[in-house]
Amino acid sequence: MVECELLSKCGFFNKHQDSKQAACSGFIAMYCKGAKMDECKRKAYRKEHGVAPSDDMMPTGSMISS
Ligand code: SF4
Image 1 (cartoon, helix red, strand yellow):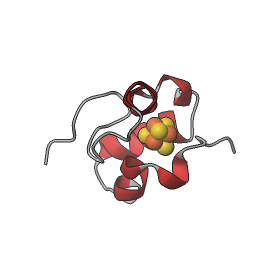
Image 2 (cartoon, rainbow, N blue to C red):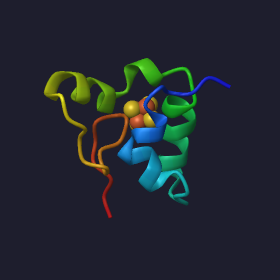
Image 3 (tube, helix red, strand yellow):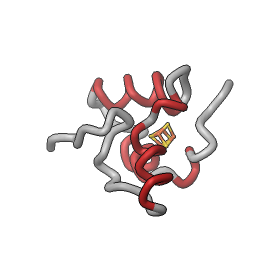
Image 4 (tube, rainbow, N blue to C red):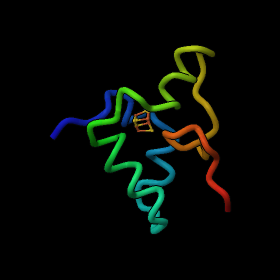
């Protein structure tokens, strides 16, 4: 299985991988372990700013609402 190379150090993935929220598990399947991993906004943020975004920023760039 192909996985994002940032998986082990990604705050979103590590915090939300067991989430029961459909949005989280759906995005993990689509981005972290799926075809859209190169379109991840978290990855783009990291590249642009040199630091990781908030753990609650999703691969789409939106924030998880609690
Ligand atoms: S959220 Fe983005 S950076 Fe994090 S593991 Fe998933 S695809 Fe990779």
